[in-house]
Length: 538
View 1 (tube, helix red, strand yellow):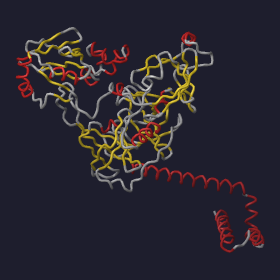
View 2 (view 1 turned 120 degrees about the horizontal axis):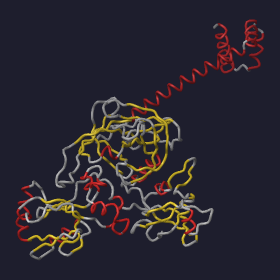
View 3 (view 1 turned 180 degrees about the horizontal axis):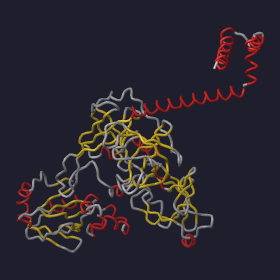
View 4 (view 1 turned 60 degrees about the vertical axis):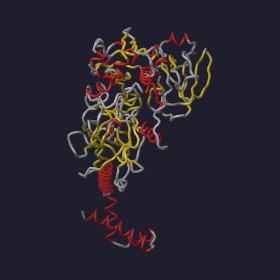
């Protein structure tokens, strides 16, 4: 112990003399050699140099470990300060009685502070909100917040607090990049069942395009991890090396220890989009592709042995690619990335779906395509834009159902919320005509994407319609001879008809006639009898 102390004091003495007194190391060496104590110390050093080195290395390592541990703790504490608990008091409309709504419910989620005094979270955490409350870390007081921007296609949202100074002093998080496969990450949040923040660690196991369950129709890049992502964790940050690398957003009831988070690439796309004050959404090429893994198919279209790509099967009308691509075109490259026959591209150490390149574009940005058409290569640039007809196929949030009630007959647009009235297995339980019109008709007839099918949902019993069979869930084809392509068409066809009767024609061939005068006299009575505040919401 004395020997070690002597060595330390000698080192401090050397530092003092050199720095404070201006003595050179050479002068100090001569001074040491005149000291018998130091000479003895030097001999001991020569004899025990291995011991000294080992002891110093051990101490140095312990110091580094301690500093690293203290740094990790400090970073975790700083991250926890930026994570908030969100309570959403929400209310959804009733699609079976579209003039009404369900009672207010409550769900909890997580979020975190970002630049600009905003809170980032998932769209599904704050959808259909009637009141949003935010709780800061270790603070039991609720603070009111509102949704500033929301993207249902990417399941992201940013909130602002009513108190503009509330987040002052809370450090905004710093974003990182895409984590490596098999690297470690840590999730922070407030899982359901507790009011205190928690964190779980896991490993990145997969990076790929995946369905975002919030909308049910959008596919974007996701990162899979075995870190626990439970209800309530949604919207919380996923952290690696003190930087946020994603937003926790969905798990699986069928898989154990499996969750997904939204990577920073998607988050940054959302933040760039809203920078102008409005959210446009992810653009879509609006085409249907097919892989080219069949050698006979590649030979049929004349591809050379060294050429790979994916073939265009359908170009949807009025979409980004309409007027640029044609059915039968083979996409060889997207923005100079070669497209493989399975529809993927090589990026860094990953092989991802080629759609990830399209996802990187903002509204009105150009994408470069190298296309094989009629055995020739052509280059083109296509301006990208969202495609509303496909967006309308998704789950509906933040608005009440649209409807029109006339003669006690309830008419609604056909959307996925109507199909969900038939249960989770609506894909098999819903009437075949509705399923076909929603899912498959646009594949056979792409222009049908721009048609809003109208459903006669059900009848509200009244003497004026008592002679009508108890039909329901029928697609409306014509009203008073006018083809119906949206709900407004049906309203106009009825209200502009000067005749004594109204003729309703359904796609099944069923026809029904209403007495216009009797219906006009009964409408107000029907609305009052069934507690309907107004006959329409268009």
